[in-house]
Length: 478
Image (cartoon, rainbow, N blue to C red):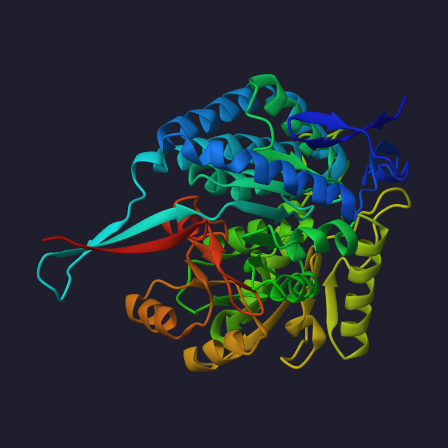
């Protein structure tokens, strides 16, 4: 029997009054997993009103008590790790190891943000006047909203909810319609631990209706979205009429620069790991590689051998694979088209380049050479297990090629020369650069993009600051 999920609003699971449903499909088998309600503007409004009603009492709690609730959620998540892991594997096509990492990292992230309860602080500022103190308070924003992607759906709940809750705000979350089942379990956990009603709410549905209301509603103080550039632009437009604060993590086209003094084995291993994680469906993973001419042939040989070793399969059936399927038929078609366009423009497929099997949305690990900078495959996000590689001569050339992009989320560099590293770090125009390691951020860092990769950021102290607003008080005394 197919599971029918319900919205979670004001501490209760509530039926959708439209009786319209969205089907959730296993991307490895194309089997029906569940149905979720196709929520609408009114559902989003109900959830926002619940969050608004709950917010004053939540903010009135000492921050350390709010932190205890985050610890409770984290503990409950760890207790249900096997179920959550299996759910993420089934609906998202992740490998079992990556899904388990996502679950446990989410719990750790909640614990980490909880510990900021005693650490975030205001300021006392020197006044130009005698007998006056200037106080800068850091205060909650109020009602916040989060619009989630499908590629890390469980972790992104915590990435948006944890900083909101610890600073005294409440939140309404729209899970992706492609991967909502993990959010239903998260809601069950909230009810199980008896988190105060209205503090976290979940509304299912499509972005153009539910997502738009979460961005456009005048009661919302901040809307945070992780998704495509198009979704980010639509969110900004919706938020603009109320001058609502936005925090956006959008697309990426991460360059990897491999210098001729690089440890080739390390570079190949890190780049393959960064490209194949979640079948290439990660906005910060390596999307294009620039290799210095002196080691180009050797590097391509090693990279081809590494690509041949990548194991592809149904992650629910095999625990020894490196990647599963793409998320849906549309994603598969997009990757097929991008590779076909590159070949038509003169590129060469060294390995892969086609769908794998006829059931599920699997695409072979694909290595492409013979590309040039103007090709779409070097400029637009692929979001699949496809890697184009291009040669360069000098570091200056490589940096210019890397920066020649509308995105600016992550980048990476492979070299053993400190001067090369420092020059690249000074000139690369990206929110993050990874040196001699795979692309994967730390929760205590700051994940933020330049240019069309986003506005604002997440994680660490600076991510927490996104969920605070200032109130300056001038206190004069006699």
